[in-house]
Image (cartoon, rainbow, N blue to C red; front, side, top):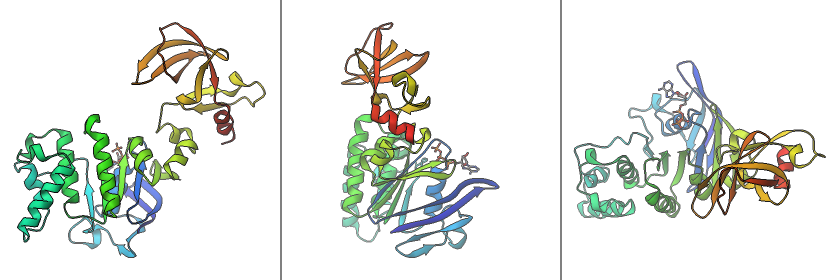
Length: 322
Ligand SMILES: Nc1ncnc2c1ncn2[C@@H]1O[C@H](COP(=O)(O)OP(=O)(O)OP(=O)(O)O)[C@@H](O)[C@H]1O
């Protein structure tokens, strides 16, 4: 188990993390999400042992990790960290970049494992290409393959799929996270992309200005966000007044996800501004009570069309009581 307790960290005298603590079971997949600059990368670097926390402690399977001030080589041996800058050997082939991290003694085993990793990350066709000729997404995949070369106990991924095309991203995500599960690798992913969190994480940690503001099962966080900040990490929010929909409710401004508003034959009058095709549905931008709101609908509408909106009453009331 990876146990992180009450970590605080500051760059010079600028506090960046305070009171951060959580535990991850062996093989658990934890996401760290939050707005840009909230401290996700810093937290991964503290866990990996590149930055020394001011206070707090980190232990892996009951062994306390002391941090870079107490080790000759920064970085914990049993962990692998895939940073945002990849750090590949530029004039070396994809296959050699991966093989370098495998023991030299067992040549046959080394070749087999390299081939497996090339296949897992979809890199076989470019195995002989030099790293400096790769695209950002290809470099990112080589960096992940390298981190998995010798199976770590803990894999720390910083925005792992940010440069990978949509077409490959979903398949790759499924493969990597199921690889980690099968091999009991604890995986901590810092991400902006809440799809990483909702579909694949066992536990999510939401950071805001270096502090944990919500923590738990992803579904629960999505359905019961602790604040508009947390909800806004998933989708653009609609701010509405409760009395537009129900005059008996206290007069409050509340936030709703787009799917919590829907088109009906009666309700709040709105005028369509834009319809954006999203695949099998549309994102519709409307103006109601002088505000821009977003809703989902199966059909698109022309600009200027008048429609009426109703609200998911449960969501409205839940929001009111939070
Ligand atoms: N080496 C550094 N020296 C001083 N301040 C730093 C340093 N690295 C990061 N910071 C600051 O610490 C804060 C947290 O940065 P961090 O990179 O951890 O955020 P993040 O959540 O990972 O952001 P992003 O999602 O944009 O990668 C930011 O305000 C950043 O400017």
